[in-house]
Image (cartoon, rainbow, N blue to C red):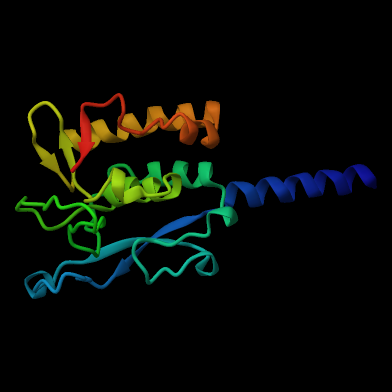
Length: 193
């Protein structure tokens, strides 16, 4: 009887661990904290990455405020990396999130994708001041200066760098990543705008 009960507990724990989901992508209204006129995009659908468990954050706020001690950060990063290739438009327009930075985004694209949002959220999970590292949800090629916020080679390179960084994070741990200041794009030919 003890063996059957032990086996049942192991199966129950395994099934709940496998099915656990931290984030989900939901359809959301287009928001503009800058006061920009967004009426020309009213027919397009927009999305946000939010936590499945609303008690862990205030999903209506941006940036996504997460009580970090309540989630498995390594698993959360893994889930966010799975959003690679998701080119649905984020509900927020491109804007600066670091009020101390005087740089202004002068690109013509006003939208960014869910896959870029996923990388942006990873920065929020890891860094104490993520917007010093990534002020705008736009990625730039260090070689030719081209930028991307929805899809393309620049974003593919960024995901490759984040995936390599994630493998290192799993190997040495979050503490060492922070202590040694190992940034996701350190070895990439890509940077945040």
